[in-house]
Image (cartoon, rainbow, N blue to C red; front, side, top):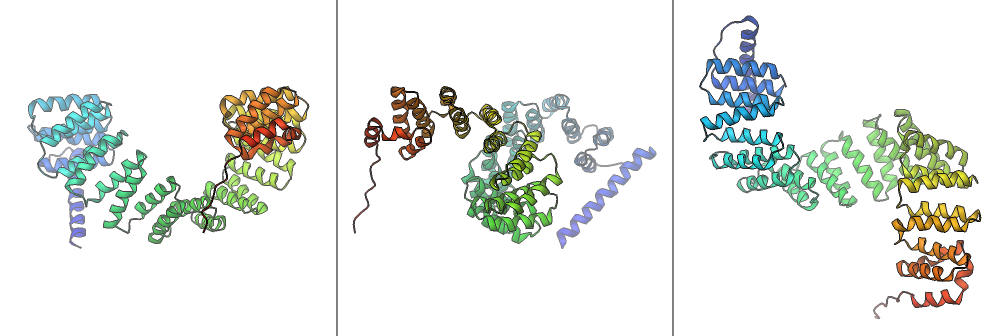
Length: 477
C-alpha cells in the first residue's frame, strides 16, 4: 500500500510541476524550477515524444541554471532521441572537455555512438562510464546492454548482462534480457536456463512461460512446448497467442483432434485470426475431414481474400476428394494471389496430370523446378510426363538438369537408370543404378514404373546382391 501511495503522490507532484511549466509557456509568466524538476519535465516530454516541448524545457532550464551540467546532458539527450545524433555527439564531446569525470556523459556518448553505428567507439565510451561508476553498477551495466540490444549487437550486450548478473543474480530484468539475447543468438539451451531461473523467482509470469514455449517449439520439443503454453494459459485464460501456439505444437505432435479444439478456442478470442482458421482447416484435412476443412479454409479467405494459403487449402482438399475441376479452380485462385509459391505450382501440375492435361502439367512442374530446384518430386513428375508421352530422351534431359541439385536422391538415380536402360545405354544405366543402391538400397523398386524388365536382368540382380545391406543381428536370450 505504501508503494502505491508513494506512486500516486509522485505522479501528482509531476502533474503539478507540468501544470506550472505549461502555464509559464502559455501565459509568459515567470516560475522557478530547480534542476531536478526540469529533469522530470524533460523526461516526461521525451517519454511522450514531445520533442519541441522537451527542447523548450531544456532552454528554460539552462537559462535558469546556466552552470548545470545535468541540463546540458539532457539537451544532448533530447537531440539524440530526436534523431539528430551528430549534433548530440558534438554537444557531448564539448561536455567531455569540461567535466571528464562524469559517468553520465560517457553513458550518453556510448548510446549516441551506437546510434551512429560506431560500435567499437561506443564500447570504449561505455567502459569509461563503468570505470567512473561506483553505485548501482548493475543498473548501469544493464542500460549499456540495452543500448547494444537496440542495434542487434546481442553478443556484446551479453557481456554486460553477464557482469550485471554476477552482481545481482536475482534481478528479473537482467535474467529476462539474458534469456532474450541467447534466444536471438540461437543458443536456445542457455536461453531456457535463464528463463527457468526467472521463473524460480517469479513463477506467475505468463510471458516467460510463453517465451519458454516458443523456445521448446524451436527445438522441436513440441510436448514440452505444450506444457509451457498450458502454464501461460492457466495464469491468463485469455492469452490468445499462447492458445494459438499451443495448437501449433499439438499439430506438430500429430495430435490433430486436440489441435482442432485448441484452434477453436483461439478463434473464440480472435474471430478475425486468419491463420487460426487456416491451420484449423489443415488439422481437419490431416484427419481426412475434407468437407469440414474446406469450410474453415473458406472462412480464412472470407476474412482475407488475398490470403493465398486459404485458397490453396481448399484446392488440396478437393484434390483428395478427386474433384479435380474444383481443385483446379482453387489452386489457380491461390496462384493468382501468390505466383512465387512452388507448392502451388506443384499441386497445379498434379491436378492437370489427373485431368489428363499433360501439356499444362508439364508447364506447372517446370515452373515448380524454377522456383525450387531442390524439389525432387517435381523433377521426377516432369520427367515421367515426358516419358509416358514417348519422349524418353527429354525425360533423361530433365533429370540431368535436376542432377546438380538432386544428385544425392536415390530415386532420381534409379529413374535415370530406368530411362537409360530403355534406350539401350547399359553402361549409363548400370552407373546410375549402382549410385542409387549406394544411396538408399530399399528404393530400387521405384524403377519398376519405368522399366520392370531391368530388375530381371542378371547384371542388375548381381549388382543388387553386391549391395544388400547387412542384417542387424539381435542378441540371443
